Length: 403
Image (cartoon, rainbow, N blue to C red; front, top):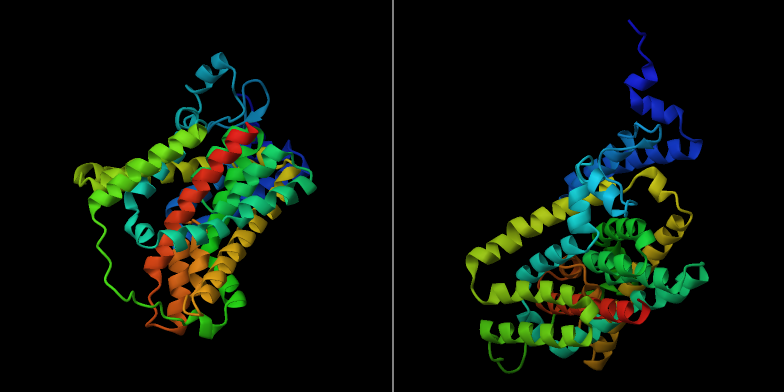
């Protein structure tokens, strides 16, 4: 009987022994990071629906490296680098996540499904109730998506790569995925991973930004009640808004029309009273797509894929984009604060960074800590929804101009 080769039997040890020092460090580092994401998701510090599958996928892909029949090292999860049709058809029958990656992820379909689910949960009446202030704040909340581009170019990225990482400032994961797939496909894996990791940090980081920029007595401002009662916004008005905005934006920016359709068909289903379909879109479709998105993002975090020298730059630029957008939103809030005779709460501005509904909740939470009687959530959600729309518009502009 042949003696067993330890490294052949336990290929995790074998691939570690055959790897360079930097790959070994990266693999173990990503395994630990994956476990940490699961822990933070379980504790509710980060979004559990996304971070738990992402974390366990990240740990598994870096642990599950094996020797392939041709002697190279690989895995049985997926290979994002394969593009030749015959090879792709073969590998789809071997790597168990390859069909989902090819048919749902790399073409942006999964991003559209998530966006559809988000649309099904939005109540656009908050936007329609205060359209001008909401859109005004949303424009300031996009500051990071613009100012990060020259910074990224200074760091050596080309204009397409710069625009892709700048979209992290919009704090909308599907938009980042869609933009990077269109403009910087060679970097869409690290850009998308960076985006989703940092979006989870908005809940933990933005409260400190609010406290730094807005004193307690200003955070405590209670919104004024309207002097005369406004006409209620009914479902017919909201449905009309969804159809008109979807049509106009698709006409202006056809390259982003899949995103516009996905968002506003969700809104339309909700306002049409199609309960069974609404339950499907806002339930199984949204949660299933988010779960698969998290799992695929984790599995794409293989050490060899993330060792591109540009990844460190992307990490810095991603957090800079979110920070600049948060500052921009608060600046917009301060402008309305002074324009209203110091009666407007500038904390609402942070909600213009469109991580729905996280930033709106963060704004309300920080205000409630200093004044439990101040209820700013309706205005914050209006700015939040406007931020989603402006981010989609900027996505369309960038792809149109740079493709």
